[in-house]
Length: 340
Image (cartoon, rainbow, N blue to C red; front, side, top):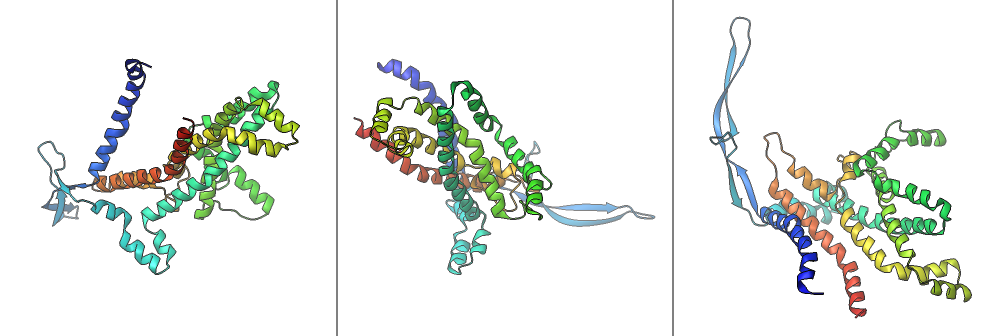
């Protein structure tokens, strides 16, 4: 392919990636080393309350942010190095809790609490998404042509629903007197509070993620099933291979590139879990790394945002994603080299 033709096809994608991924990422990386601190000044504030005959006034000195000519808060940009990362990680408290064997104290540190849930959520939902996705794909592939269209439509519905709306729907089904909670209480003859403990909330969040993402994996695998070598399958049948053996030794090896592709997509997406935390209102029990970054950016009562700590948290999240992607990327690279 001529270079000009290649550049015409690839150039726009590279430009968009630079504008919307690379440059913002460099900006976040830079902001993690600086701290924008407002300048405060002491002013006398007089507070008056109405009285019977005269007002009662008191004067007190308060520290308020200093404003410029346009009424904006004046801030000073200060280089803090790795201090923002240290504030997020809180390694001193974490080390002390681990040495004392106090897991509860360790889980009170926001970053490690969020990291524990994020890794658990990612690594548990991954095999479930792959397994149910392959199962749905096999059901669609083996369905008759008359019902295949409706089966595909029903299978895709969870993936079509907006993530936050889907999470809220599952939330309402199980919260309080939700339909499923009421059914379980009637069946078990006991009161059930699905949102009273962290582990039950985590199970519901994982259930929603698998329900929402498995259809995507199913469509990818269904497309791959259309390219399976039928001669290999027929030879396996003639040799007496069972259905499971044909699936294990013929179908799955053929789908392995697609399995790696879905794995990478799911790892990147689930490690940035956010919609579930919002949809299930789990901030009091369960938080994720992505939600922690968002929490740092929420203004406090004085209107200040911890941009430096949020940037450090975002960079640590990116590092975690890269570490999780090393294994599937190495496999893809080995297969690419082996094919040449």
